[in-house]
Picture 1 (cartoon, rainbow, N blue to C red):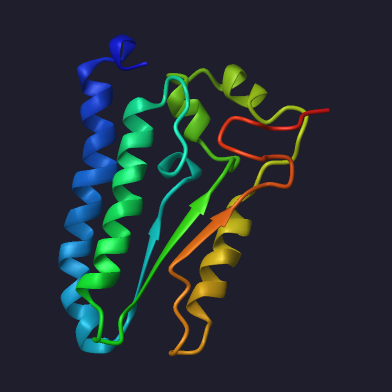
Picture 2 (cartoon, rainbow, N blue to C red):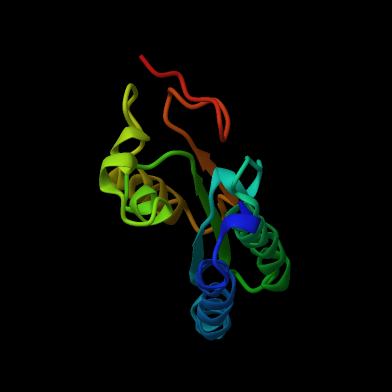
Length: 156
């Protein structure tokens, strides 16, 4: 929750998910326009649904979702494709970071169901990249079968 987070935690999240995101895009887009390239951004289900304790993270991922749509408009007519891949629960170091390095607590997040894996997201990215030039996958929400929303996960 925002009121329980340190200022440093909030600033780091905003720096990574907003500021760095914009810096990379600002530097990449001119080259992508010249080459009719493909900009792929990593969003999250948290950019479309909010949940308790996720105000800052959900806010930054909502930013990514909205800005990705604006990028698509900004490069319209240039041949550049813009895609947001928005995963649900993916087993990564995210939970360890979220729980302040508590790896035991982080492991419990994925107990009782099979989350997505990094390869699943890589496959989604490859799918978007491999479409013919006239096809743009603008947004792809990728969820584990056990996950119905940001907070609803069927566990055994």
